[in-house]
Amino acid sequence: MPPNELEGALREMLSRRAAVPRAVAADPAGAAIRRANRIQRRRAAAGMGLAVVLIVAVSAGSLHLRDDRPPTGGTVVIGDPDRPPLVERTIPPPGPDTATPLAEVDLLMDGAIATAQGRRVPLLGTGDVERAHRLTDGRGWLAVGEPTLAGRFLWAVAADGTAQVLLAGADEIVLDGDGRQVAWKQGTVLAAAGIVNGELASTVRAEAPAEAVPLRFVNGAVLVRLAPGRPGHVLWSLRPGPVDRGADRASTHIFGALPDGRLVGGITPGTGLPACLTLLDPARDLAPTGPECGPELPGDGRGAVSPDGRWLLVNGRAAGEDSALLVDLAKLDTFTGLPAGPAMTGTVVWNSPDTAYYADATGGLVRVAVDQVAAGRPAAPTALPGLPAGEQPVVVSGG
Image 1 (cartoon, rainbow, N blue to C red):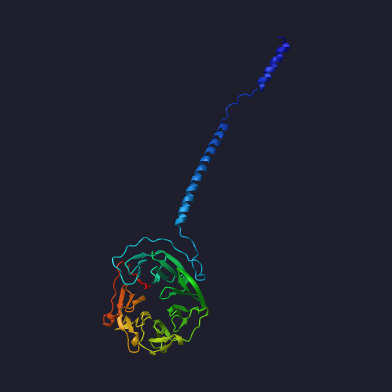
Image 2 (image 1 turned 135 degrees about the vertical axis):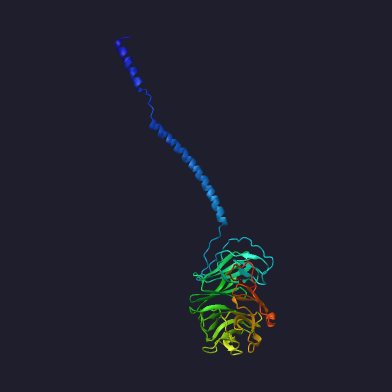
């Protein structure tokens, strides 16, 4: 081969070899980066899978909890009593039945209602109760809370103990004898409403003096004390507008009504004289009718008239000691009262025309039977089993 052709062939071979890429030496850094990227991609995929599992689990748990959570709603405040009530759905544990009923009436004690039928119904979420009323249809109770910084509460309590708030924040709350009406006072607003299926209906509002206090329902009207600590009452006929102050400035206490509509109350016959028992005419601004001044009333004004209007059980004094007295209202002008038992605390409840219940200062339950008191046998308190020391039972009215 001529030299010039050999040189050309050599040049062509070298140029082709130079065009072929040479093997690259090992790159540890690049390999580590690529390995890290692969690991990160695998972890990201695994993390996304775990997140999906957690989301599904949390969602299922949230749905389960939501099913068990009580429905929310606005608490019924006095300024807006027509809003839907707040219903507490906490179901209390079943309470043990008592072997025998403690009394012929329901009793509220140790956070539960001991019924006259021997059941024990625990109350949850109602707070401290000062008064309670059994509904006539047997579907539960109405409970009025003790005064607090937030005011008084009214709860509707079902037969299983679940509670529904009807009112919150009132200065005072009173119920009628059937548990179908409620009246309350907040500031200068005096209001009343019916209770239908656990809700307030047909609310009526009126303007009243700031110091006025509703005391009870009397013959469809609300008895209002014009000022605490001073004589004078007025009957509000559940009409809107300013409350008529009336002309009564002598009555000190009102205990109830007779079948003919007259009220049994105490009056002050004059300055410095003790209050005495008499009958008051609601048609004449509670002017005295019957005896102008019957038996004296040295007690604290706690008392109640029997359902038939024949008897008055009232705190007074007997043999120089505080005592409950039984007064025959048919002989008010000559009858001074019979010692009936220890002095009353809390609410006195007439279970029948001739039987009344109340609690005394020691927490004992007192059952007053008219025939026994008339025979000279005053009632004695009975200790209640299961009542915590220092606590007093609440005698439930109505039913």
